[in-house]
Amino acid sequence: MANSLWDTRAISYLGCAAQVFLFAFLVIAEYSLLTIMAYDRYVAICQPLHYGTLLGSRACVHMAAAAWGTAFLNSLLHTINTFSLPLCKGNAVDQFFCEIPPLLKLSCSHAYLSEIGLLVVSFSFHFGCFIFIMVSYVQIFRAVLRIPSVQGRHKAFSTCIPHLAVVSLFVSTGMFSYLKPPSISSPSLDLVVTVLYSVVPPAVNPLIYSMRNKELKNALKNLILEVVFQQQ
Image 1 (spheres, rainbow, N blue to C red):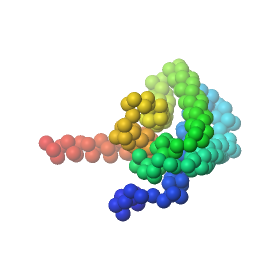
Image 2: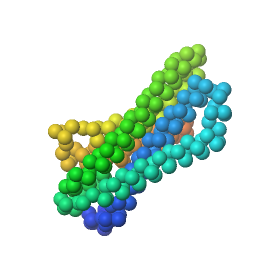
Image 3: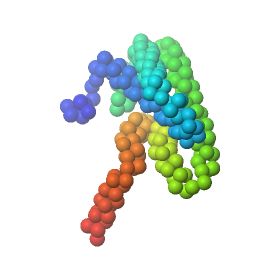
Image 4: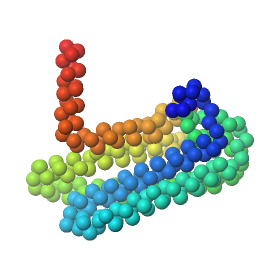
């Protein structure tokens, strides 16, 4: 935002490091919290009588602290390791913000392999969270389909679908960005994909979660009808 306002593409060394740290911290924290939310929905639908015991205030505080603590430690390791590498291929980052893969391309030291090792560990953590979310939703959908009333099934699905939509968008764009083969990689494609997983999910989060609000649905419906009738 500052670069856009002052018409510049420069960033300080410390500013770049801060950007890498905050980006990694927020991405890992969001994914951890999305995993916790999957567990929350699993307990609420599959074990409703134990919800107060399994997800009391103390348990919620512990899980949130674990998510933020894991994100802080992970992002700190990534930042220290990335910026300890000698950057000997210029200082132009081929991205619209400081991100680890473009920074690694500027290094000509074999020490970058340690950062790749950290990225593999991070991907393993994310993959484990993804498997946990998928297993939780398999159990949830099995339980929902056994609910006899249509209204009960609709209520359960309306609780899960917004969360599942955010997870799907976040995971699919992130995986494509980091796991796409080098043969199809290009600066323009990298830019578009990075925008998809770093900008779009946070932007649509409020809309996806708010669609459960009847007042918002009615306001959106009225707005669409008003626009349609005005065009006619």
